[in-house]
Image 1 (cartoon, rainbow, N blue to C red):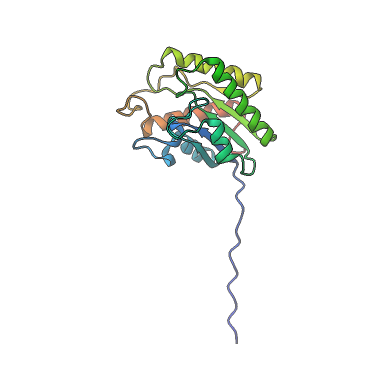
Image 2: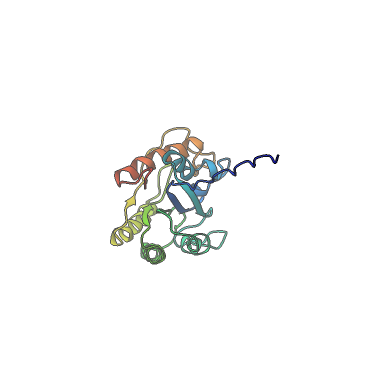
Length: 202
């Protein structure tokens, strides 16, 4: 008598929201903090998201950094060919120093237009420059340029600049967050997203 065959396991598709984020070293991880412990990953775990991270250390809206790729190029190469996510987060500006605010504004404007054309139903959030210590004056000009472009595109803008993250949150390089720093950024981001109606069901 033949043995009964064992039923194949049923593979269930996840219903968790798909979220994609473009950013710099704060987003992708740096130093001893790997990508899976960055604020982006910690936020995704807290909210139960599926997460795809794009971008690279040293990059910005205008500054291509050592990899030779701006945020717009990262969107094109790493994200735009994928199915549309539920939410796209664009986080940066820290590396756009020595660039006129007008140039930053234009770059943000182009990226938002590109993302909207590619994924018309995807919700978008923009986060301004992250700074763990006292931010230099020029960073506020970059922040304002990003904020205006987001407002013109009717896109939520989240501003972390000027916040005090507390002790033990900055690596010895004086720039990047420790694991605790990433955890505090993630906590801030979760709260800020909730105010705009973004959460587990995004």
